[in-house]
Length: 173
Image (cartoon, rainbow, N blue to C red):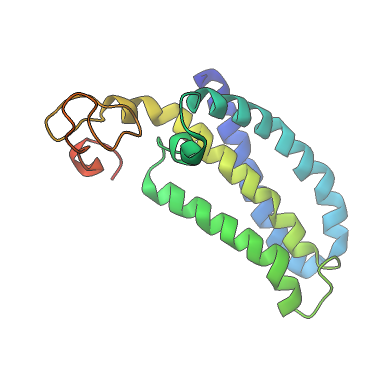
């Protein structure tokens, strides 16, 4: 898994940076840039998204559907999860609200459309980071009495004690 995760993570990081650079450049150049960028950005999504889905399914195999994203991103530090939400929020803003605020037709504004793939590249980056670091997180999970517990457990399966807070487990700060 690690052999796949590193290159996909690097490609996803390049994709995020490309989306933001093209998004900023589109404010000046307009629709011409969009026509040139789309054939590069969108095929790249498939290159990173297929391995992301496969590795994410392997990581979350024994997890309930409602805890899917919590399990998939459990190897990420909190600041990375916050950054992911910021990218998702900004992409939604730029895609749906920014054209209206600029007074243009949503279909005519290229800036939002070029930032939208950044959501998928960002998710891919975070999942790949999690794949690379989840083992350290999972091994350190303990209850307040010191027993090992499963990755998403809130209480110890052995004694019923609550899970120790992340800062006590050597998890991400």
